[in-house]
Length: 300
Image (cartoon, rainbow, N blue to C red; front, side, top):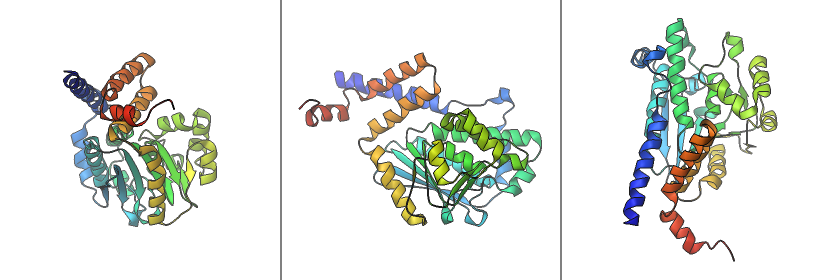
């Protein structure tokens, strides 16, 4: 009986959380026409977004367009949305590392696509499309890390802010260059940056369009650590080792931890408390909890 009730509560809570995570940031009433912008983005091909999943529950998401410093083409934007959907359905996942091919992170949007959708409505639709995708990425029940090698500029800098943590390699930089393009961030990067470094520092980074090297990023709280390796393979191995200290343990517990933190960050206090209660109910009396009670006595 107890096991049946626990399973029922677990399923109900999972469904509610999944609905919240997939809730549309924009709807038709906002003038958002997703299918229209998808058709336009499909015209600008090139590069790919590759996802691999390793046995320890860590996914590796690779931005693969090295000839353009991993700039987002239209089809890459569409593929990122598809990969996020795949990650939402990955029940055994615990962590995610996002990095770029060819020893650099991402140079933002492919200018060919930008020039072709330069009218206001298309630009706003592209903005809303990427905001929705990156918001879903940020809300994944996976602990995420942006591995910054080389340059993360413009939209690439914005992408780093959609991750829980950022790791940088020697000589790398994060730079919000939007001002020089006559723009402000449009993929949600400004709103997320304020929450990471505070409004004052965010204003400096956006209005100054300055390069943020690993040392300054550490000082600002924009980066957690500067890795020792600069080559792609070595840096990725270091990033996996760094992330594993937070993903060790049952997937159900790690995912629950990320969910309660997301709720605390995004919801009003009362709603966050109710969500925490619901998530607590999915792990209390669950396999990991019962096993811990047997093998890890609290008092010695």
